[in-house]
Structure formats: C-alpha cells, structure tokens
Length: 358
Image (cartoon, rainbow, N blue to C red; front, side, top):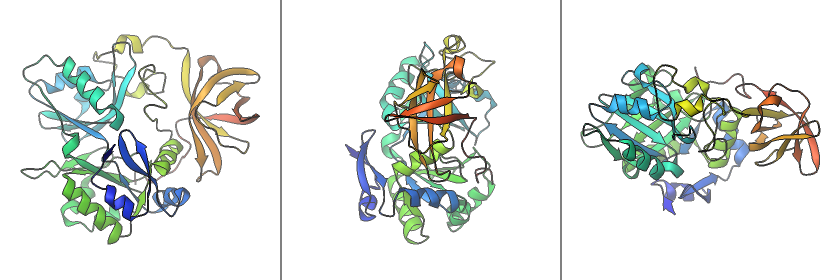
C-alpha cells in the first residue's frame, strides 16, 4: 500500500488508518465522524486527497482529443475554468468521472485514485496524434481540500493564495505554478460547501497542511465523513454508484452529455435504459447500506448502491438503482435486516441550502 506525503501527519493526529484505493488513508480522527461532518457544514475541514490522480494532456490537438474523449462539451471552457465530466467506453459505460482543468493549450484531468492506471492506459490507447503528449503526474503532485463556510476567510491568511481566493468563482481555478512546480488552487470540492482544492509539490502541500491545522485550527476530516458529506449532496461515488456497466444517463448525469459534438460511447449512451439512479430518504428509523434491496409494495425493484445515516438530517439516506417504471412511484421501502422501512424519492440533493455558492 502507498502512503501520501501527509501519512505521518495523520498518525500524529491519532487518525484511524484503512486501506483505500491502494493507499493507507485516514477514515476518521479522534473527535469522531459526526464532529467532522459538523465542522465542514458549519465551519471548515481539511481533507487529504493526494491519492487522486492527475493526467496532463498537452499539444495543438488537445482540444479535439479531449472533446472526443469526454462526455461534456470542453469547447465551452475558457482557460481557468473547470468542468465535471466522464470518460466512457464504446458501450457507454463509465470508465471514470473526473474534473477537467482547461489551461493554455492543455488540459489537466483529475481522476479517481483507483482508476489512475486504467485512465492513463485508455487515454494513451486512443491517442494517435503526434501533436498530443499525455503525462501521468500523479506521483509528483499532492492535493488537499479545505471545505466549509469559513474556508475562504481562513485562506486569506496566506499571502500567496489570498488574491486568487478573492477572485475565484465556483468551478474556476488559478494557475499559481512556479518555474519548476505545478501549483493550482480551484474552487471545487466534494462536500457541497464553499471550498477550495489546492494542488502542488509534496513539500508545499505538507507545509500548507501543517499550517492550516496547527496555526489556524482547521479540523482534519477522514474518508468516513467525506462519504457522508458527498451522499448528503447526492454526489456519486465511482465503484458504488457508477462503473463500466452504468452509463451517464442512467445515473442522472444527462447534464454532462454533449448534445452537439460526438464522443466515445455517445451512441450507446443515448439508447433507452431500464434502470435509473434515485436518492432515497428513510421515513422510518434505520440505516440503509450497500446492496440492501428496494421494494415497491411487495415487488423488488432495485438495490442500494450507497447508504448512510445523515447527522445533518438525523435520518437514513441512500442512493440506488431501481426499475425505471417505478421511478415516480410512492410506497417504496428498503429492507433493512428483516424490516421494510418506508422511504421516499428525493430530487437532486438531500440538502437544499449550503454555502457552496457563497
């Protein structure tokens, strides 16, 4: 198992360590998962996401190449803008979901940790142009995310970041690279709150983490709270809620399907489907978990792909695929152990008000 540059910091903060996507990562710290969730929702929290992958695509043909490679319309991007998208196979299945960073004559693709090699191999196999260079930067870059309503105010304390933070709108970034090191700060995240993700060389990120925790009291946040926070927002997790057998339309990502330009897998994505991803909130007490069965009356119609207890809502919440014929039905239940617990479908997100656009 690999370790991020911040592993020793996690140990010193009494983190519980687990194996995740090939890395030893903190699942929670000593103050507990609920405390970590509340820190992000009401103040700020700091995440080590250095396990994520970064693939740089450069060259004169990079615009055309990335346009065909990904599902969203990259022609809409100006330099300094980010875009959520997917890479799909020929059948329309999702190889990965990712964030694209548009730079001068190049794109930085930020991909999921477990899929770095798969993405790189797929991308290079599709490249037949001498005018495109593909580089896997994942081993040389570390990444942290500060999330929460107080995140902007906290970053104002760092002179090299303050001006950039002031000028960043949602899903934009500043390239603050030095002559020798790639550094980026973006207004992005996986929590649904105001927040920033900061990329840089290992020493820069290590020092920044230490200062945020020790000098400004930002709470470190583990994987368990991160999963709850993303699920409260209805954000999908690759490997749970999407994979190569699921296409973007089935998991309600029609808004990232480029209607104008062709891309790999588009023809098959647009075919009709028999299943649909839905968000479910329990009206009875209980906690839904992955693979729990979903019912309409006495008919099994699907399975949970992600489930947890939401501290914010004080209820069990879930995400899962159901037969599309039942997507607008009432009287749904989730079988939790031997009980059928009443549930209802929620649109888009479980949380209606957050600091994400503040």
